[in-house]
Length: 105
Image 1 (spheres, one colour):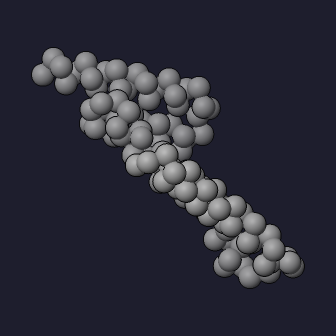
Image 2 (tube, rainbow, N blue to C red; image 1 turned 90 degrees about the vertical axis):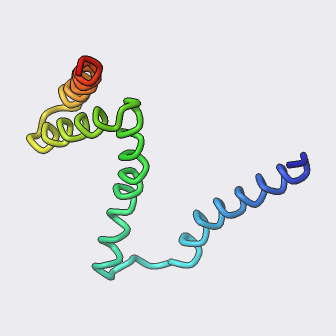
């Protein structure tokens, strides 16, 4: 890719990013009253974060089994309303133990 093409790609990406942010502000002037649309817009950031995070959780350990085990342990502890630090610590310990057990076996 030449230097000119890189700048064109950067400008196109910046333009698209700007349009995605500016268009809703300019097109939607009044409060959104549709219950479905409000609910949809409320959950979009959570869904986007989940889509970006879950593959990284599974791949981060290097062993998909360890990542899935840590995700399961973290999910259960979060469901039981454990704090962020205990969930993170238990997930890290789970990855360590799973990696250790798979090397032994």
